[in-house]
Image (cartoon, rainbow, N blue to C red):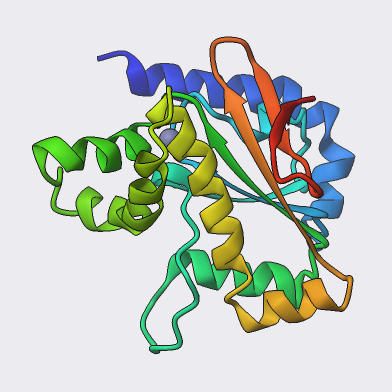
Length: 205
Ligand SMILES: [Zn+2]
């Protein structure tokens, strides 16, 4: 019952203290944005990119969705929100880094895993997380000790591979103007695991 009054109170606290502290920055940002990192992360309320990376407004160009999935490029003239954000980030803003950040205990990844035994869940969730099905089947075939975490990591790699199906991304990567990164955040410990470019493995940083 008190949720929205509390939200408004929090906004006023922002306007009274956080904003004045960064007023110069907000005034500059009012003229345009020049973020150097695009972050694709989960909609999960526990995984907050700006908090994790101690970022200021204007630092991160963020897209969040269920299970931090980047669908493969489709040239079908339909509306694709992740693709539109990618195109703007890479071709207009010329952002030099894209980070796909997954996380532990991801409900979207869990929905894809549990679909194997209990069937698809949700009218909208099922088709979205089914983009992980092929990756899931490959992961399960290796009998991982922790299928959930294994699919969270494999899903990040799948999205990084899907990024390369976008012509403008492939072109920017090949020209040396864009670097793709993978990361996985563990909520309880606050630890970030970064994907090593050479080995492809995720390790604590
Ligand atoms: Zn998630």
